[in-house]
Length: 398
Image (cartoon, rainbow, N blue to C red; front, side, top):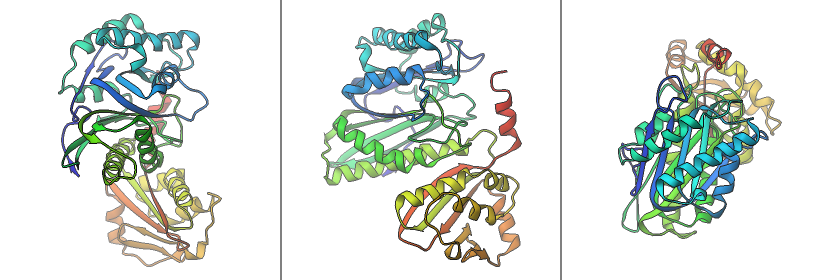
């Protein structure tokens, strides 16, 4: 697999745009993604019981597994907005469909931002018209910026994989910096590919990738109301991918890699974050147990605070492991911070204070935890917890 520069429009037949229509006081706030042909589609939506209007509309539209466009706005979540919110989400799809000459059911809708306000359709309507007129192969970067809220930078990725003797491309964009603790995905993430694959098989591949990536990140332990991960496959490159084939395995590996790339970018840009944390757990009895251990450590508030303060407090990691409810023997646990053994058999190990001081100041820090119980492993990503996180969220609406 080879990483390439272009993001959401890297695959054949995809165009995008990002424009400002005045939802936010400044910056781009409306994104449009379009496939030249109808695409197989799959999605995973938030497990939060409070679901925003665009999530409910998109869940309906994706039922037949065929989508051609996605329209997304930032600045307002269109959540807790009642019947009017549903009507406005549906209207976004209808207005987009008219401009692109496709069926409204072929359009997915996404929103992100403040909860509780009605979308200003008098601004969004003209905005959709402008976004449709500006669609281009080079519009992916603007689209990635248009879905940002408290993000400090756009999140994009793309790669190529050889299937059936020719290049198949996958590209993606995501947003998210706060309210990141998924029970499926979190934030918004959109992935495109020119691979030819059925909607059913595409959903299978997406679910696997989500479990390895978006389901393994956290910033603050909070689940959002608007989360979705969507993949569109328009089939413009290569032969059809069949389950159980070598090509499916290669496609799955490529999708996993792309999803992990996008997912890691989110906690790296977490609200107020100064460090990206990678927590790898191995030696667990089951993969599910390993996943729970890894996610709990990276979520644990005192662990996050310790890393912000450059305090190599491995004892907090032990405390986090112990509250998961999973099988653990404290006297078998080994903990490494990068190449430094911090705990052996659940007890303090001698380490180089100068080396550990350098590690704790890195922008990316890897922690490896060996439970020494079995063969299962998992990796989670998160960030430290800084005073700036509180400042950002104390004044989010005002």
